[in-house]
Image 1 (cartoon, rainbow, N blue to C red):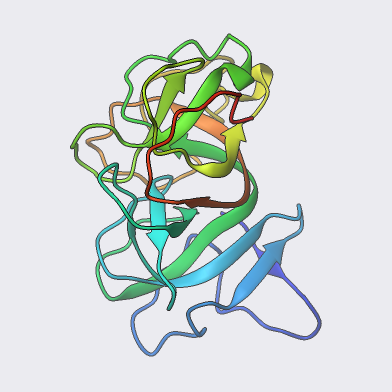
Image 2 (image 1 turned 45 degrees about the vertical axis):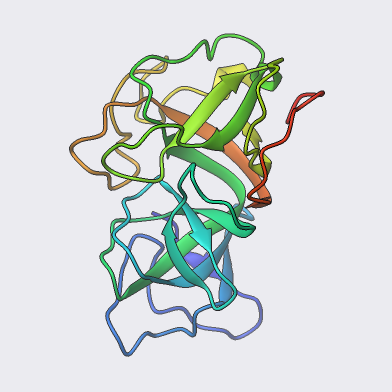
Length: 206
């Protein structure tokens, strides 16, 4: 959970872990930063999400889980808490998110160089939706790359729950579905997006 600050005299309805029903305390699209410089955007969720999953954000700041089948360009962020359809809440779009959820039960080689992986939306249907997938780089297969998102350095890719190495299951720092079986990763965000077009990646996504 992060407490939001400034700019200026702007006030916030609550921390990033909170969700609201209408009337929302913020207009979808309002932005805020925390004391560590991470940036968030307020979104209207139009489908169920869980903390740590990836969401796609449309032009009016409605958010739903990011799917591997998405074939349109979207802004991408990480949901900060669990929410249902027609609830509003914060989505992180910049900075370091400490526990992005995957659908992979193992650490997928996180001890390797972080730049050895391409980040893409989930590659198989699962519950919940919106998990992150790591693809080993290089690969000859075309990928729906998430631009502006990359793994933190190997020492920071462990689950941030006091553990010293990546383990299966959700981090205690995020509200997640009990059905998660995947490891969580520390990921840098720089206003990520997808184009909806699979491309062959010739260089590292980092």
